[in-house]
Image 1: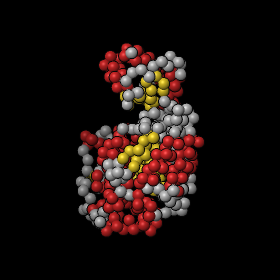
Image 2: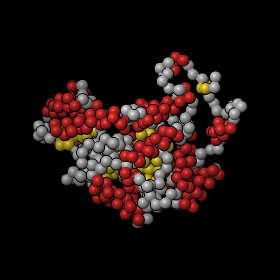
Image 3: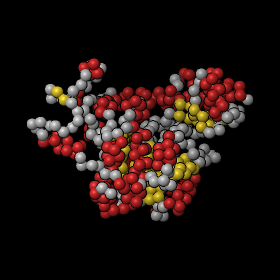
Image 4: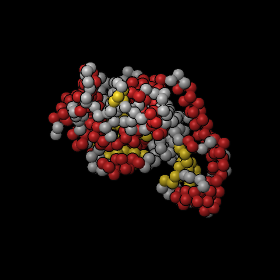
Length: 434
C-alpha cells in the first residue's frame, strides 16, 4: 500500500473507523499523489520569474488558443476556458454550489459537510461511490423501480449485489417497511450496506412525503444502531423539481452528522437542475456521522476522491465550470429558473389531469408521481415492450419499456398542449394490440 494511502487510512482509524471499514479494497488503497499537480500548484504561487511546470502552451502571459475557436467564446476570458481546471473543480464554483445547497436545504443549516467536489456529471459521482465503497458481493439497496445504469455502475463494474425492495405499497405510498426489511437483512448478512436514495425517482417520478422521508431516515438509523455500517447516498439528479405533495429538500441534510455508522454522500449537479445536460457538471459532497466537525475524515475522503479523479479523467472540463459559475452569479438566474420550473410543473399536472379523466382506465393504471421528469404507466392487457415497438413503428411515438408491464413517459420533453394527444395515441396503440 502506498504510504499516502496508509496515512489517510490512519486518519480514518483515529477519527471514525466505521468509514474505513465501509471502504472497498480499492477505496482503502486510494490516495492523491504528491506529484506534478502538487508541484505545479506550488510553482503557480511562487514562480514569479518563469513557470515551466504544467503541460499547457502559453503566449503573451495567457493560455495559447486558436482564434477560430475563441471567436465563438469571446464573452469569456481565455484563462477561464482553456487551462486545466483543478482536480476538485474551480473553487468559486464549489463555494457557489455549497451556498446553493445550504439555501435550498434548511436541514443542512449548522451541519458539517465537505466542500462539494466537481464531477463529470452525476453518473461520474455514482462511479466514484462504487469505487470507494463497493467490493464484489457487497449489497446495494435499491427500489425495484430503478435507473438501469445503476446495474452497470455498481453490479457490472464493481460486482455489487443489488438488493431490491418494492417501491410502492398497495395503497400507493413509498414502501418504507419493505425498504427497512431489505436493509435489515443486509445488515445481518454483511454488516455493511450502501443505500441509494434517488428522489425524484427515475423512472417513477415519485418523491416521498415529508413523513415518508422521515421514516426512511429513522429506518436507516435504527439499522445502524444494530451495528451495521451504512453509506447513505442521495442521488439528487432531479432536485428542485417537486410539484405536489412531497418533501422539497434532499434527505442528505437529515442524514448528515447523525450517527457514527452512517456516512452520508450527496450526488447532484447542474445537469438537470439548471437544464445544462451537455455541460456534464455534477458534485459529490460528504458528511461524517459525528455531530462535531470531523475534518480529518472529510479530508481523507476528499483526497481519496481526488485520487480516483486523477486516475481516471484527471479533471473535469473547465469551460462548463465557467459557464455554470456565470449562471449562478447572474441576477437573472433565479427568475429564469422559476419560469422553467413552472413549465415543468404544468406538464406534470396536465399528465395527471389527463390520466384522471377515466378515459384510459381499462388500459392501464399509473404509478404515483409528483416530481422530476417522468411517470410510469402500469399496463393491464399488453406487454410493455410490444407496445413500445408498436408505438414506434406505427405512430412514431417513443417511450421506454421497463419489464413486462411498465411504460415510462418523459413528460419533460412533451409540450403541455400535446400531452392529451400523446396519451390518446398510446391508448389507440393498446387497442390495436388487444
